[in-house]
Image (tube, rainbow over all chains, first blue to last red; front, side):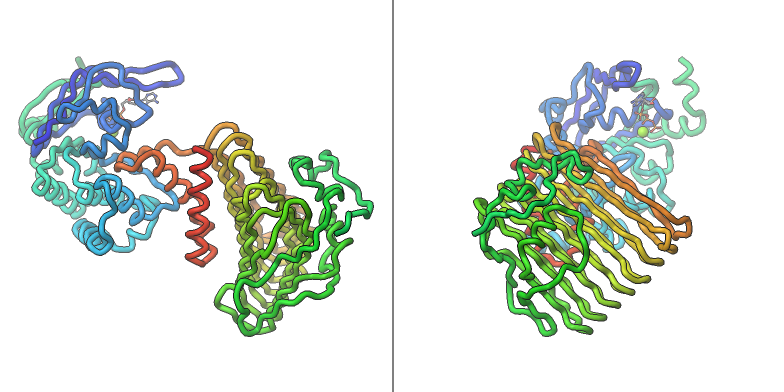
Length: 250
Length: 360
Ligand SMILES: Nc1ncnc2c1ncn2[C@@H]1O[C@H](COP(=O)(O)OP(=O)(O)OP(=O)(O)O)[C@@H](O)[C@H]1O
Ligand SMILES: [Mg+2]
């Protein structure tokens, strides 16, 4: 049983016109097995929250804390956070020229497991993970995310989620850009990871359709750098019907 | 032993061709003060396949040169190491040439010829290793319809000085592909040059270089389109790490008035991995006719991409390993063109080692 605790998190970015505060005190607690959906307008700071937890160097933490099972996440390097059990499925996965998917996955698995996976079982494991997400085996020899379609990049993220077995996953708009079949396939991947690893999930989305597949226990409304309302799954339906006008006008 | 006495014009460093080169570190190769040892270090690494022969013979130069050091070599040496591939021979396995001896207190002046008969096909891999002071005039003659992949590996130890011209003369419908790799030595200065003597010929000059603390690597291309309908491609990628690592890439491409239908593109990309290193990159396209298929160039110099490193690290990979992956990935495009797994892996490990030593 793991707990990711975000307390009063304040984050800013450096711009040409000085530092701009994006997150203005975020409080959120996620436990193993729980799924929290975050919905909110463009630019409200959802990706900033995701990246800050993962440790992207662009963001400066100006206040608050993030802990995983009591350990100070903000004090860890990016790779240490992954080793502690955090995973971020990115809104815009990055292309890494000249590095094959298979080499990348093996390097990551070696780092996270503390030893190189046995070659025989590893090949089968990767093959299985790719099949489960309906990815052609040829992706293994392609360069990481290079020339992948938007939907293929998202499948690749969830394939990593299944292979690397984190404790807590932040899915930043994993559903955006997926066709109806891919949405189902990717959602099933997330649900498998939840079932197999008792994964805690922070799911950032703009649409309720993914919530039909991945059932949230909690829905949070995010606006202007913080959580402005919390509720159950029915809150998502209300947002879909009414939009964010109630939250951003204030 | 003899001392170079012939009186050639000694470069001062003000000449365009020498303006980047640290002349003081050439150990006298450029001004004739180097003592010439009796070395003939180039040897075949294994038995030669059918259709190939390796001899030493007296040969007149293939092409003129305006390089002072090449002129000195030609003035001193008539004996040429000659790898010859018979007409119509199709040799699948690469032919390896390597160095048998080296020394720093005396210079080796080397003349090499690689010649392919009509429609011959071959891959030649030259391994330049050890610590040595070496000046080389290497000429390649491609008869009509022949095809050569020429891999030249500068895997020298840290004190070597190597100055060379690798000049290819490419006849009708012949295909020349070179892969120049420079990962070792104190000063390496190579002039990869190409001249086309008949239409339908093509040349692809690929290269990678990785200079670390204090190393100077210069690659000065010259592609002469003096006939119609020839094609050339240049793609060199370099990385630099550590104080006073310095690389120079010059891409001179000349499209003469007669060279209608020319198709050329040259590209140089540099990755600066630390502060204190310097990459000079000078593409130079001279076009004397408008009747061409295409002509272009690009040159970029960048640093580690933070987004790439973040992505890799977010999967648990340490910063050090993430950098290694990115650098390997950067060079991969060209290294894989060598087509020999063993050599490729050896080079990648050398690159890892250089990266580690430079503390990047
Ligand atoms: N370098 C920067 N300079 C100025 N503003 C920035 C910079 N980086 C981020 N921001 C701003 O931070 C805010 C939050 O961005 P973020 O990507 O977190 O939003 P989001 O909620 O994920 O939006 P979306 O739903 O569109 O993905 C945006 O208004 C963005 O413009
Ligand atoms: Mg976002």
